[in-house]
Structure formats: C-alpha cells, structure tokens
Image (tube, rainbow, N blue to C red):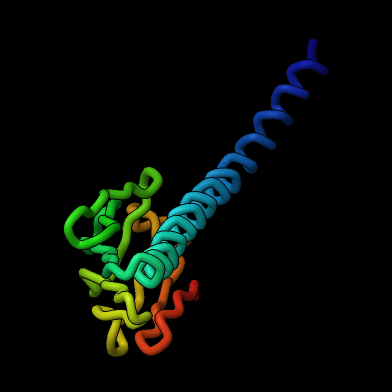
Length: 138
C-alpha cells in the first residue's frame, strides 16, 4: 500500500509540472492556427481578385475574434479559434484585379494575432507589402 501511495504522489507531482507547459503549447497552436487562417484568406483574396477580375476585401475589427472576407458586395464572416483576437490599425484591405492592394499603406500595415488573455504570450504579426501585395508572417 505505501508503494502505491508513493507512485500516486509522483504522478501528481509530474502532472502539476506538465499541465502548465501543455496549456502553453495549446495556446501557441491556437494562435498559429488563427494566423495561418488569416494569411490563407489574405492570399486567397489576392488570387481571386486577379483571377475573377473583381476586388476582394478582408475587413478587420480591432480586438475582435472574427473578420469578414470576400467581394465587397457579399462579405462572409470568418471566426478565429476560441480565445484568439486580431489587433490592427487596418480596417479594410482591398485586393484589386490589377494586383495592387489598398488599405495596407504606411508603417502600420501589420496585423497582430494573439490570445485574448493578457497573460498569454503567443502572438504573431502579419504584414502586407503594399507594392507587391505580398503577405508575410513576421
């Protein structure tokens, strides 16, 4: 019986050490997933604008966990994983059929993806080059 209690105590100590690390990994994966989703939609908007000869928009609301994507007349709402938000000074990014982009000009053309809780560390930046329409994860 004492051996079983010692083993249970050791398992409890290991779990107490592992659980915070595991939560950090899960939070990091949620931010990675949200970043990949936004980058994919930005690149898709650029591609569709060129292929369909129709301007495509991606509309962000600062501090929100959702954004809108599509042609200007029929935007679709996209939702990020739980607990992830977008922070940006950009509101509307429009990819034009000629390959140009509007709304992503100046030094503030970065989109930050992070957890909503202030204690969480994982975050990624997404930047858009207004000259080449290149979307890049920083």
